[in-house]
Image 1 (cartoon, one colour):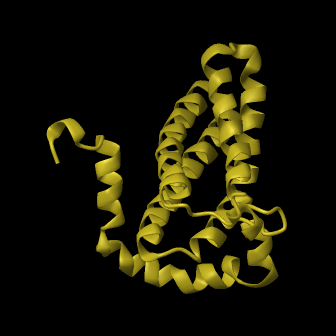
Image 2 (image 1 turned 180 degrees about the horizontal axis):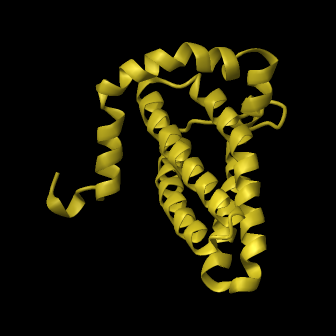
Length: 186
C-alpha cells in the first residue's frame, strides 16, 4: 500500500486491536458469564432490542454520553450558576450507564472473536469513563466543582475512545441486532 493510501492511525490501531489474540484469554474468561447474564432468553432479547426492531445499545449510549457531554458543556461555558445542573447531568449519565452496558454485553455475546476483542477494550474504556464520572460526581457533591469538572474531562476522553470503538463495531463490523425485514432492501 502506498503512503498516499495508508489508512489513518486510528484505523491501523483498531485493525491491530482486532488481531490482538492476547485478548482471547480475558474474552474466554468472561464470555460464559456475560452470555448467561445478558445474552440469552427473554433478557437477552429485550437487551438486544429485538422488540424494537434494532439494537437498543446505540439509543442508550446517546442518553449516557449526551448527559455527560452536556455536563462538560455546562462546566466549560455555563458559569458557577450551572454547577448543580452539571452535577445532575453527571448523575443521569451514571444512572443510565448500567442499562447501556447491559445492552452492549447482550450484543457482544453473539459476536465473532475479532469483534469480541474490540468490544472488550470498548467495555474497559467505558469502565474507566464510569469511574472518572463517579469520582466527578463525588467531588461535586463535596463542593469541589472544579475538580469534578476536571475528572469529567478525563471521563470524556475515556468515553470518547470507547465511542470510537463502538462506532467501529456498529458501522465497520455491522455489530447490532436488527429485524430481518430490514434486510430486504426493496
